[in-house]
Length: 124
Length: 107
Image: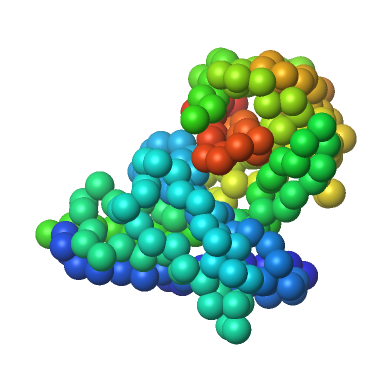
């Protein structure tokens, strides 16, 4: 069974650092892109970026570039999302998801398996 | 970046109703369009990929259509478990942007 297990809820103060994780199981973790999605309280889904665990190639949304860092350790089938200095506006649920690729008229991507989400609360 | 819009932003419906949600991309994306369902407190769930392919395990009352810039998600006969928020997403080019969502609630 393909699963993504995310780390638990975090409560942090502004300016603190944080690293959350997403551990894959039931498939060849290295060979599939992993994506990160933010959902702020009461809001919609925002695509943050993707990382390919095999070589750590990554693509960030311009909205998140420079604010977060994605990484992966293929030896333990785990992807990470980290902040060096949190802000209150980083309060949200963060989901990881596996991406699949299909070739139609051109290649396209979709997110077929999702983690349950990691809740991050940043408050003084 | 490709911008995604959805209409309506919310709708009220009854069990048994036929429901249609529209998604539009700011530029052509062929059939690189996905639909997700999200219930309160839960992670999103993939319903449709490639505009019209039903994800394994998803009931056949869900269907998708469209190509280019205009797409639709149809629920042929609404069941109580279908009351949720639905998001479209383009999977053509990064960033793989989501639409703002359509909430389907009880009439």
